[in-house]
Image 1 (cartoon, rainbow, N blue to C red):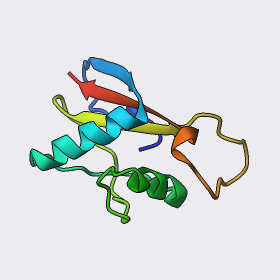
Image 2 (tube, rainbow, N blue to C red):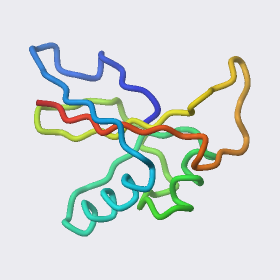
Image 3 (cartoon, rainbow, N blue to C red):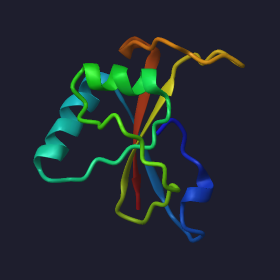
Length: 107
């Protein structure tokens, strides 16, 4: 996902553990989680970002989940964002160096 909308979290007391992560570490982490049987669901609606992440081996499908974001305690969320998003423009090409990532655990 490219944002962490607070209205996607249950309206209760939650703690979030937010860890910035390098994209290379995210690749290994996501591949390991997929091999362990974890379900990787993404809500990324930006095709260039999906392609950039897939190009380095992050196991995403090209199809975006169009459902609403809802997270429960115990979920692990990866937030990916452009480092310097231009305002009012659609970015057509994204490289891995254009992206930042965080792993967020919902406690």
